[in-house]
Length: 87
Image (cartoon, rainbow, N blue to C red; front, side, top):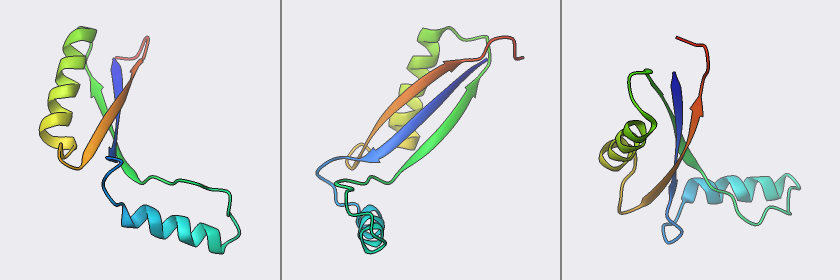
């Protein structure tokens, strides 16, 4: 079984008011050394053993492009985790 964690964040040029509000609140609580805070989304996809790694990569990119991330505002990265002995 393979688990893929997809991380979606705003592009650098897009304002993220939620992150700004959290960072300001942290500053008021005394956490003043934080220079940047990002808020995003995380998706965890579990794939069966029937697909090859290349097929999984292709599907993750297609799913992320079509459904998980807004191309105009967001970027995504992902992490592939192979789980041995779990079926």
